[in-house]
Amino acid sequence: MLRHVSCPRDRAPLRLPRVLLFTVTSLLLCFIASACSSRASNASATPNTLTFLLESNPTNLDPRLATDAASQHIDGLLFSSLLERDAQMNLHGDLAESWETPDPTTWVFHLRKDVRFNDGRLVTSADVKSTFDFIRAPANKSAKRGAFRLVTSIDAPDPATIVFHLKEPYASFPINLVRPTTGIVPANAGTDFGRKLTGSGPFQFVSQTQDDEVIVERNPKFSGTAPKLERVRFRIVPDAIVRALELRKGSGDIEISSLTPDIIPVLAKQPALALTDRPGTNFTYLGVNLEDPILKRREVRQALAYATDREALVQYLQHGQARVAAGILPPNHWAYEPNVTQYSLDTARAEKLLDEAGLPRGANGIRFAITLKTSTDEQFRVLGSALQEQWRGVGVDLELRPLEFATVLSDAIKGNFQLNLLRWVGANNDPDIFEFVFSSKRFPPDGANRGHYRNPRVDVLTDQIRVEMDQAKRRALCSEVQKILADDLPYLPLWFTDATSVHRRSLGPFELSPTGDFDFLARLTAAQ
Image (cartoon, rainbow, N blue to C red; front, side, top):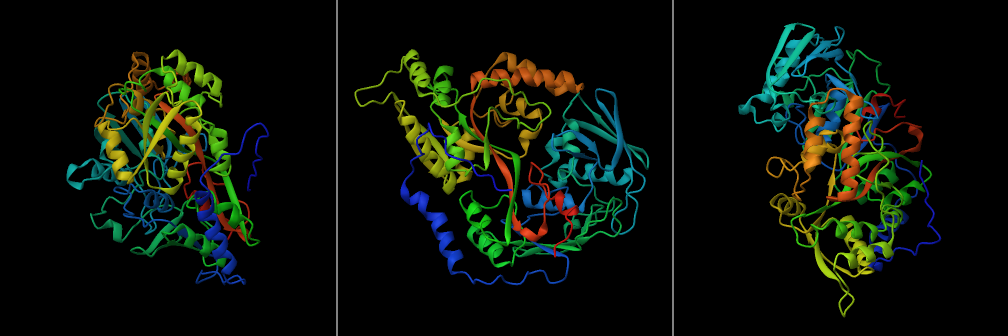
């Protein structure tokens, strides 16, 4: 359902350049107003077919190689994995009916005996072993190989048992085995498997036309509850306004998290369309270079956090389609710690912290200047302008430097930045993220501690989180890390973006995944 968020009475409206407020929404209103008033017939060629609008082309549907979101989301419909996750990121069996760790470096999985590929063959441990052997082989150049760097060998002692041997304990190892991260393919799958996909998921592959569409249909051999949908047509429509018009005309049935926040409320007013949303896990944040002479001081980072009106940013820029973040781990996660230092807007406190830091206002009212690198994406540029205005109120001159995203990321890896505006998508759904991003042992290229954050206690805790197998003990370790990070602020957290879907109202109610996966399609009642 569409959530309407009222403007708090004690907060002045967020002021933005008029042209930025006008551009996208006004253009869309004009397009919709001029569009044909009668709803076009659904683009589905046959009954019970759904037309799903994608913003980008799936680059490789071979699940051993796929890393882009579009490919992995579709793979989640075509292939089973050893494990799957629920909305709280707890693990459950998919192909595996049970698993155990007889010692800290051995993981044993027992497979279900009733799962078949869509060509009728049973899925066995030989298929699982072959899938991971392919990923681990350097010659195959799988981008997923690094996730299994600690695996020394894989055994398949019988058709229903698969054993992973690791060179050291790693509690987060199972996260690499979940759907849709790593789907299991037949043991005889070759390097050309991406053109003739065979899987054991609820749908089976039909065809792919580059930059045009991917078609899947119901898998008659699926071992679970058969989908009601007969066919799904994934159409590639790169332009957001064109996707909006396709939905408006009825030539598209559904999209997920591919529209800008200002387009969604306009579409949701159309009688034939509806909005489904839920709290999501994609994390937007300001990265901080802690080797910068000014930003390395914790009181300065805290002052910037108090000077940021994140509630207003969510209200006016995200149209309420996000939740203010206190840290990198999403609130739906089993290890999330809510009792950490919070930073609501408090300009008086921000001013006091900056004064105490020995950074007084100059004759022009400015204390210091810093630069924010952001992508040329319109949403990020508008957000940068809003932060520029908010921080000027406490005497901070924020210079914006829009760059191509690849340049922003490259500069982040090199440490060539003061502040940058980035997102984590997916990787922040496991406690392993704390070590990867905040351990002083994980500076690039060996990790993503791009701001060179150093805290000896965090190093100790993240080492313990990596090997602790007991979830309750692991949660306690994660809790302490989150409290430290909320005080130190190596990141300035902004928000978690909601998972949203504009779709044909006749599809009825359905529940999205917080990560935006396509699993719900297997449970959707019907397309028509």
